[in-house]
Amino acid sequence: MENKAKLSKSLILNIILFGFMGQVAWAVENNFFNLFLFNEIGGDSTDISNMVAASSVVAVLTTLFMGSLSDKLNKRKIFICAGYIIWGVTVMAFALISPENVAKIMGTTPAAAVSTTVILVIIMDCIMTFMGSTSNDAAFNAWITDITAPSNRAKVESLLALLPVIAMVVVTAAFGSLSGKFGYPACFMGLGLIVTLCGVVGIFSIKDSRSGEKSTNSFIECLTYGFRPSVIKSNKGLYISLICMGIFSVSSQIFFPYLFIYVDHYIDMSTLKLTVPTVILAVVVIVGAVSALVATVILSDKKGKAPFLYPSAAFFIVGLVLVYLADKNIIWFALAAVIAMVGYGLLMIMINAAIRDFTPEDKAGQLQGIRMIFSVMLPMLTGPRIAAKITDLYATAQYANDYGEMVNIPAPHIYLGAAITGAIIVIPLFFLVKEFKKAENK
Image 1 (tube, rainbow, N blue to C red):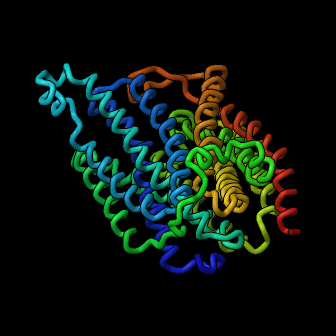
Image 2: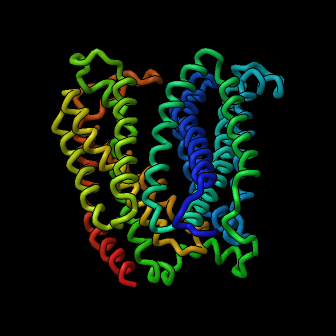
């Protein structure tokens, strides 16, 4: 690329377009595929659990394999554009899946075809995840690393951190409303078409960040690159950043999956004449905007990332403790949540930027899978389990979930548990600050 320190308008527009549409597609999967499987197909909670587990494993393995392949072929654009085009097609395919359609193919009744349809949905979800992880998690994220420099990465990360917030608001408001009015098939067709069109636009708007000359290393060498002891030893800053991301993500997974449930069923809303979605979405949007604004305008990549690591962590940890102490009071909860989420946003921005800073320039694709292990797989395997154990120990009431099951209402202790877990991050942060200082003195 040319001068990576200065991002052109076309680059910024592509970052926003592909980053936003990717987050919209992921938000629909995370928030509505479970409901689709349960309400429209006839699956149960075990089927939903199986689908979530299968797609998370596929996401990590895909990012590892396809990221390495993009480095081997020394190309990003074809993975991004073709990936988004086919990703959209796989989303549209869900519009055709129903017990009725499967029954016609099998020559049986819809009731008898439910189990087969459930399996088909899970398989299609894995196929969709494969395309999404190829285009977004592997290629797009590697492309971001390619086109940015240490002097502008916090700025770009702040923008990328804001996109999931906006996507969640759009998906919750638009997809939820439209699916109720027009049905899931129409929404899947519409969303899939938009994602596919995004890939088509990229054919004309994206400039490949790589030369296209195949790497002389074998694919196996590319695939195993990030696991080699010699690579870990020579890239301490990167792996310390990944450890920080792992601890931060585990802490986040202790409370984030239960945030809506906690506010809906535990917090006392009688003092405010607002609906739960209004309160939550307003807080999330404001906090996301503030985090991005602070990182972009005040930090502006000028003073480096090291001075802001500890303050960001302090906001996050102290905020979580205050949320725990707020108990049922919605006012104190909201104020404490703002503090915690500002810390969350800033810490995520700083750590993600650090990961990009310490990633070897020609190895970005090969290391995206390693990033997913620390940011997605390990946290999702551990965080919710810690929260479940805490809830089992301290829950004082139950509620009927969407599946008719009586489950414990998460206790405020999950925020204390998240804070204690998050506090462990100060150890690797100490070494990360050292690595930043080493890099500055080179």
